Image (cartoon, rainbow, N blue to C red; front, side, top):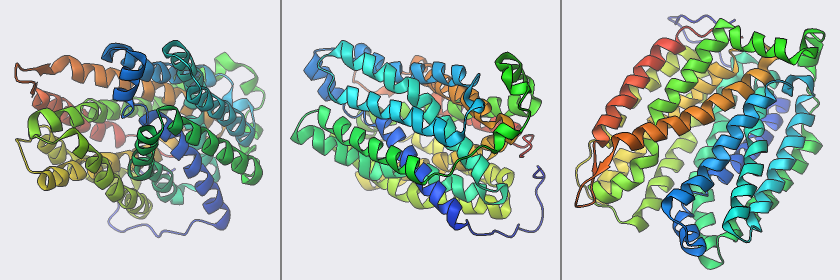
Length: 411
């Protein structure tokens, strides 16, 4: 187990083996399509609202239907996910996710689209947990930080490449086109995973008789004190990020003075920088320790959160500097967080543990966004009010994360 206290000298860092590189690369491809399926929906909002003749509330249902479906499937998956070979579980659930994405591509009306999002979310909630379960099983704990950074750089690629390409396809054709491309890409990545991922059955050799009782296994997952600390860290991290992030673009337009067409620069610049920073932070996690790097990134993110939530009207270059700093530091916290959370469970329970954590992550991110929205109001001129209060709430959650993270023991 990794010592939770910091040491005066850095740890030696070994390179990922060839087999680990192959596994991590495939997991990064899976994670890219998994993230893209979620994030592409939000910038497609204006077109979907116009095409289906719906209001913002009904569009919100399209987005939240995926999230809540993923949360439910993550919870249910914890009862059985550790009973299967990790590779077979990932390929099966990822195939279901790919089919769900293609169903979105060919949805003829609003109700069908909501149903397709529920279907995709039911499998997507399990895909996310399995990606990090496989990473935890297949990569040694001494190299897990770097591997986590690579897999999580998929979010940056989604911002830099996926969102602009998806929006361009939607403009040139219609909103179906991004889902067609994403569905086909997911099927190709699924075939690659089925072909090249090794069988991962080590967890099946641990406590085979105990795992025949799903309720007993779930009880073991929920009552483990180290698991509980990891779950609380996940909740606090969601409130430290997703109370602020969903409202950053509206604030940039209504309060800082950016034009809607300039918002893509936020994702392009932020994604480009975080693509490199996430991998560097992952390397530093292995060199200096996950707990120490989490503390550094959490403390660094506090000024960035306060800066973004207090911005006055600014020219585009200065606004981009602030939002890029925010994205680098806030997303940088998630690399050591996921490295810690993935390592909090023993191998035999990691799949079920990560499924429960996925459920908690999805649910708490939705609650965080709801809390932020309840605090915010709109002035007569259209400006967002009390975004600074949301920032203070995110800072308080970040400080709580510092306390929770230092008590997690990695395995």
